[in-house]
Amino acid sequence: MDFSISEKMQTIIGMINEFVEKELIPLEPEFLTTPSRKMIPRIEEKRQMVRQIELWAPNHPKEYGGMGLNLVEHALVSEALGRTPLGHLVFGCQAPDAGNIEILYKYGTDAQKEKYLRPLIAGKIRSCFSMTEIDLPGSNPVMLDTTAVKDGDDYLINGHKWYTSSADGAEFAIVMAVTNPDAPPYLRASMIIVPTNTPGFNLVRNIPVMGHAGEDYFSHAEILYQSCRVSQRNLLGPEGQGFVLAQDRLGPGRIHHCMRWIGICNRAFDLMCSRAVNRIISPEKTLAMKQIIQSWIAECAADIRSARLMVLHTAWTIENLGVKEARQDISLIKFVVANVMQKVIDRALQVHGGLGMTDDRIIAFYYRHERAARIYDGADEVHKVSVARRILREYEGKQVK
Image 1 (spheres, helix red, strand yellow):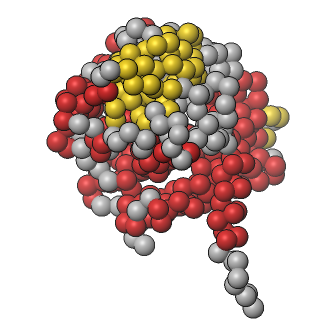
Image 2 (cartoon, rainbow, N blue to C red):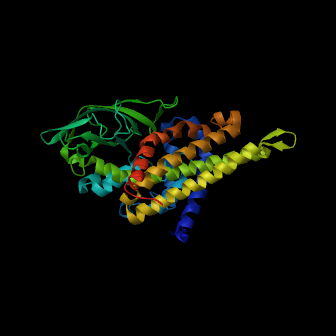
Image 3 (tube, rainbow, N blue to C red):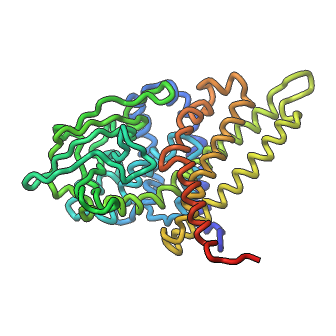
């Protein structure tokens, strides 16, 4: 398995790292203290700079204006961009748009691609993904209350969703709703494109997360669908295949998330080490001289490197052998990397002491916004049980000597 990085990718990653250091990290103090909507002109200014240096939409198809990088290549990009909360948004490869683009490209009709995919990749509009039900377990995706009932040439959608990330300011949602209630569990739901200006699409609120409701892209909405009428032409992919589309979205999306988390680890680790060597705790002594701090730094370095290799291995497997062959790895990296990230952020915050609790450093932002990594896309516990069952099945009827 060859993880060598081509000259082209070394150049791309070098350019991205330089842009992040010079253009985005200096913007963070303003980002942390300014309402998101007021930051839009500043973010668009940076996006235009990215377009000019031809690094826009790294993982999206070339025929639609992207760079067309493969999954392993984009994993490296995602790691570099993860060093700042602004990275993926400024480079046009942010979730949930990235996942929506993947399924629109694979399953969308020509009309859907022209109306939604092309402007989405160009960064002219944003989208959201509306799946999680407010009263049902997100870890069991077959449990859905939202329905889409045919009425003439339309669907009438009714349901209650929340954690529809980035719905505030989005042009459209991709909604998971039950269209075939009598079918087997995994064939009941479909994905439907719903413009957010459709009557019956009601953004109830941006949910406060750790005390911060946010706005625009940096938000998570509660949505109420009340007799929301859309044309059946807005069906994405075949009817009843919503879970198939969701799985197609999940594998590559997990790589994007996990490598972004590795980028966060790298940033928190750098801040932690810098703080340790510069924080004077008594005459001629710094935090870095304390053995417990040295132990934390060694453990975090090993954990980050191990997690990174796990993700790159999974990306390589998906790219070369397909999502099915990587199913076990996809589950493993989700809970491993999420926990490594939480550990590194927590240790970095502890080393910073009271400073770490403030927005004078980016650590507190990551602490409150990335705790959810152990919950979304399936809680850690669900992934652990699922992986264990698959592993144990391999030993049924097998004699080990």
